[in-house]
Image 1 (cartoon, rainbow, N blue to C red):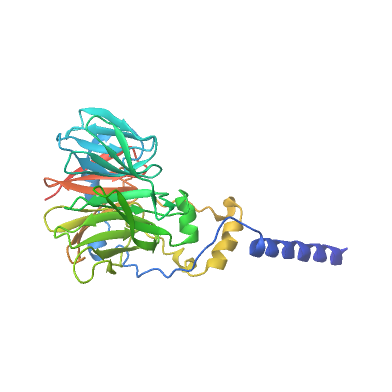
Image 2: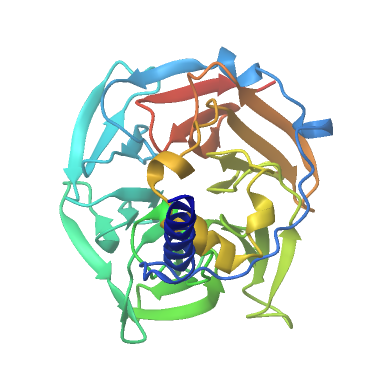
Length: 354
């Protein structure tokens, strides 16, 4: 009897191992070696300065990803449900401007007063002052733009924007896979040509053109680094790492007009899981386990934005550990005031800089 029980247990164990190693799943992990993690030390040391930020609008919608300042002296932001609203500086006036019926993410005004939007489902679109929507581009090189994410506009009118990934909208799956399919794209409004500038990025995200116009900065969220991509000069078309020691996942980046950049981070890095990044087979095994066995308690919300000088040196960080300002995806400075947007919260923050 005991022998039979042992045989049954060995059989079950064998079946379990076969399942963990070979059961087909919709996941193709790739090996990735993460850059150094400086942790929350030095400039990145934990603080609660951002907790003092004022709430500008709250409860209007979920996920005010980005904030743009319009020629009408109103602020604009987009929500999960496709709405783009505009609001006054004090937040007392709020009205719907347009609805893309997609997911408006990055926002920038062009010189003609049109709001250019990187929409996660609709591609790159333009909205005039009446709220009329025009699609600028939805494909490049015969492939669909799957996840238009963020943009910036050069002085010559060319729009540089990111296609975060070509593998869909499941961001958690992106973390499991670490497959570099993100792209930096450009759109020329004069010729209506869309070009691929840079590819094979681990979730291409924020874009900020340098004041000189010689290069742009590009955040690679899953790659945990920021690139400098040359637009002019002898290095045109070349890319180099600008910053690769971050304590958090970089999202949108914004030039403040005064010699520095603000980087927003939705999440801190998790050192406990990073040893799995270069072990794709092990990640695939863990992915096969029931969610109840793999699902860890989510980390407490921790909002963080970082200011860098033009050489990539971190100057300061503003943080919130209270859970009010979290999942921060944008930090835009206007007239000495920092406005912070979020991927998941229902509030925009307004922090007066000293």
